[in-house]
Image (cartoon, rainbow, N blue to C red; front, side):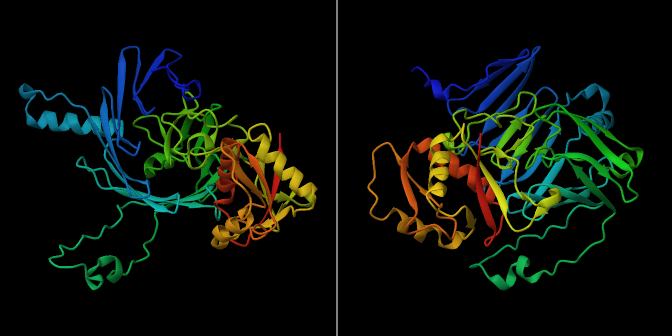
Length: 416
């Protein structure tokens, strides 16, 4: 069957690299100059395996879709005539050169809290790296490293029904352990790391970025001795050195082409191009891999300082014209422009605002103020608009407000 034009956002070839996709729109193969990489996906459209001529990587996820670990192995052709000792050393050398091994990830909501790797067979020490962020954001502030893997608790072998008194997660008291290396992030206006500085203020890691996120990085001798690296890229992205891809919470992003390698899980609510990252990478971010938004949060007070009183959320009139027009018209008619986040009662306010408003086939009922704000509910302005426009704008507002706590004052600005 002929593919729907709106769905045909597939990148087939770019600068000599060719791409192939499965019937669900997931990239399954890429090849360049005869070198081929293959990808395998699960039924939830999550990447579970990557393999090329040099290595293979397996991935696993928790029930919320967050990546819990990756396990990479270098390919090695066994040579019986060379003896077992040579083969073991050669395998270890390849593992070391390609940075292969097991990495475990821990999460705090949607932000990566820590990663940990065990000691390797070749004697390489294990380590645990913790990431700290600006409150309620995806912008990194500091990296704390300990030269030991994180301690895991063994799962009890329950013979009968589950007993909370035997659950080690409830009975174990975690001990605060000292850190060995502390470094600080220096980020640009997008929250993208530009440098890591050591406790003496010296640059330990620095990077030069291409427009869509590819980098050329440098590490100081001190950083190399300590095993310091930085995988954090654009907000919400983690660089996988094995594949060159960036794990972006719900999807994987390819900085070489500035696109995701699978379709948007929220479909057209994230825009008409199901693989696009952002309209431009110098003023927009997509921390979750769902819907990009302008990187403008926090109102400017006099003197150019940040004001804690009100946060600015932006909606693009060119991307969501009907939603943007509704906001402008509603505020112009007297609806408040300053809103207060109150997620707990959103469902009841939505029912109150839509009560008595007829439905129309092919249209959504858009409300302003939105139900997630305390000012929404009965008496809100309701307008029938295009579903894609409505849901895309809602996803954009939601993504910008996701990191803000209840009670935060917000103003929605319409931008071109």
